[in-house]
Structures are given as C-alpha cells and as structure tokens.
Image (cartoon, rainbow, N blue to C red; front, side, top):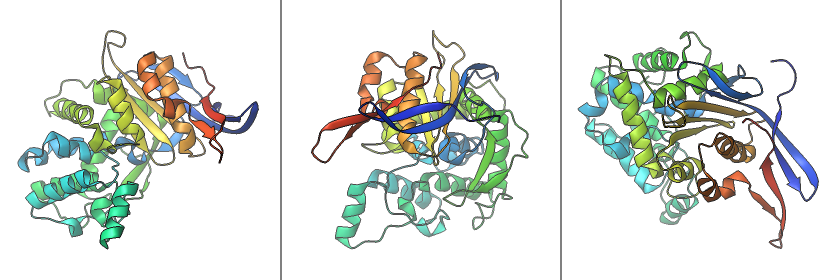
Amino acid sequence: MQGELPILVEVRRGAIVESRHRGAIVVTESDGRIVKSVGDSELITSTRSTIKPIQAIPFITSGAADHFSVDERELAVVCASHEGEPIHTEAVAGMLARAGLDETSLRCGAQSPYSVSAAKKLEEAGEPFTQLHNNCSGKHAGMLLTAAACGFALDDYISVEHPVQQQIIKTFARFAELDSGFPTAIDGCSAPTFAVPLRSLAVAFAKLVNPVSDPSGIDRAAHRVVAAMIKHPEMVGGTKGRFDTELLRASHGKLVCKVGAEAVYCVGVLPSEKFPAGLGIALKIEDGSFRGLGPAVVETLRQLEVLDDEEVAKLASYHRPIIDNRRGLEVGEVAAVFDIA
C-alpha cells in the first residue's frame, strides 16, 4: 500500500472534527471484477469472524449437518457471533447433545455473554458463564460435529493441520480465488484466522450469494447458509442491539452480512434486477474501531442503492450515531465522508 488510507468517517462535535477513521472499501462481482472501491483494494486484513458463513460450508458438504439433523436456526448460529442469550446457548447445546458431546468438548474458551441482560441473569443466579456463551460457540459446534461425522479426532479440531480446518481452508480459498497458502494466525476463539487481501473477501461474499453450480454441492450449501442467515437474523447476532441482526432485518432478504473483530466487515448482496450477478462488499476500518464501522457500511449500501431511504432510516442509529452529553443534549455525530458511487 502506498500512502495513507482515505478518511471514511469523521467524529464531529458541532463544527469541530474531533477524530477520523481511515479505511478501505471494495465492491466486486463473483467473477472478481472490481465494481467500486475506496482506498487500497489489496489491503491485507485478518478475516476474523467475517468468514463464519463460509466456514460453515464444509459442515454441510461433509454431510455432518444432515447427519445430525441440524435445522435452519441452528445453521444460522453456526454462522454467528452471537450474544450468548438462551436462544443461542440452547441451540449450540442441542447440536452437541445429538453428537453425544457437551460444552466441555468445545475449545473456544469461556466468555461472559455479550448480552448485558443474559450476563446479569447468570450473575443473579450465581451461575458461571461457560463456553456455550462464547460468541463463537456455534462455529465451534459446527466444526466439532463435522469432525464427529467424518470420524476425525475431536480434541484438536481447531489445529490448522486438522482435516476439518484443512477443509475450511480449501473451501475459503476457492470462494476467495486464492491459493491455500495464505498466512494463518490464532483467532480470539482459538480457531485459525487468515490474512488475505480485502478484495478477496469481497469476492468470497459475492460467490457466497451467487455460487456457480457444482457437483460437490458447494452451491447448494451456500444457498442453505444464506437462507438460514436471512430467515433467522436473531441467531446471527442477537435479539436486539446488534448491527448484523438489524441490517439483516432492515434489508428484507436483499443481503447477508457478517462483522469481524478489529472492524472488518463483509456483505453479500443477492442477485437482483439492479445487480444481476450480485455483489460482494468488504470493508476495513484501519484503526479497528467499531465506532466507524456502522456509518461506513450503511453509507456504502446507501450510495450503491442496495438500501432505499426507508431501509436506511431504520438503521439511523448505526448510519449517523448521535453524540450526546451528560445532560442529554445532542452535541455531535459520527458520519461517513467518502464517495464510492
């Protein structure tokens, strides 16, 4: 990358610009063609949780999802960074039980629920949070069940050398049009994360929503993942206050989306009259701040006319968050300042 990334979002207090968030955005079609971009489309970023929908593909193509009778709600939680609410923990526990496993089989680590109310209820009941509450427990359940169905070892299913992770790497490389030798590191949940160009993430999501027919069934698996996320947005994030969930709800089946740590975000726009081949969108806020993420994502979708004015209005608290003070006075805003259209 040459030079600084462009400013995508400003934090304003009255007429004063107090902070700026730089980053990059790239929009592609499934054939890899870049449709629009702001900043460096080849910026290397960690995939983190953005690729959970693609990590779920081998869970289906291996036959594990059908073997263990996984329904759409459960498939959605496999793709999730969830709030740790009962709807999430019960879904994950149910999948594990059908494989004769329980919470102790997971290797994601215990985590207090993102949901404030869920965490408060645990505290009031004197109950500890567990690995089921980890926002990645659904993904890990999918990996574990894949290992169980295929007869692979269970203890080290998160190792990059494990057959399940190798299937995931091969699948992701295919979606992203990459060789499988990209750098890997350890994610917050201990599973592998990958370093790839931002453009490749966009291509992967374009293919997720517009896969080519394939004898392996990878296209049918992609359609199942997309349908599950659209039909059960509360399983992808939470019942309230989660950007992924609210964007899925507001867009009425037009797209799938997934956040990742350090402010990386991906959207797959389904084929439509305006976008016959669909679109893949990948966005990275350079400083890793989620404060700039919502404004940048919603503004990108607004400028591309993926979302109409009514849909954008439903996402106002993410699109242009208001800054207020301790007296409740509105004193500023967080606003996108780029032009991608």
